Length: 244
Picture (cartoon, helix red, strand yellow):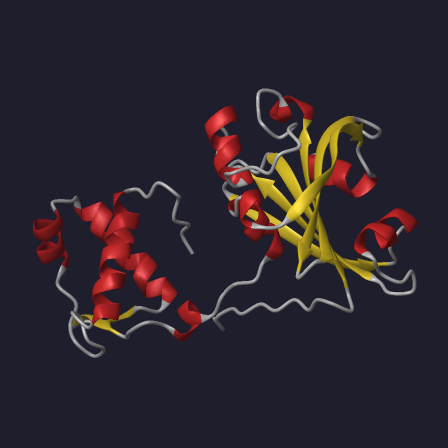
């Protein structure tokens, strides 16, 4: 599936406009979508832009193509109404100021083995970490850490103890001119360390769910790792995906 950037290119803007029209009933389910030529004329865009937008809508399930007849509206796909609860992506895009919590660690540290592998740095290399304890309903619920190569932390507000008013992605793209392309997410379970159990107010015999979201650019180069530690007795992870 093609990704839509935060500042959408023309094809993504067209995708969003057509999705809104389908949801509003301007293009009811079962009806024929305007032809490529009609869309080119109405929106003053190129044919490749229209073709790309229609491909995204088809892949996402909004429309279907019938040979020799055209493209028909299917309506809002069921998957579009299901919130994707992927912790790594959520913490990359959501401003820290939108959640209650405190910064508990900021600075250069020796990369743990898994983080070093995900960031593709040499063993025992120094990396930057920003760790925040999230509080919900007055109780600590998760530890969120952003891990970066040292060169990406300089010249940013990540060293501040104050909550960021931007998401990590937006802030790093603006300050360091990097482009996040995709995330490879891993989920493991382990027992908490004594410090983690204390910070999260959890018994030592309860395991943690550890989510690692490795952020990469379009070439596959590692840019960051988001680590989310969740007490297993307070969280469950749910995902939804289409069957292809």
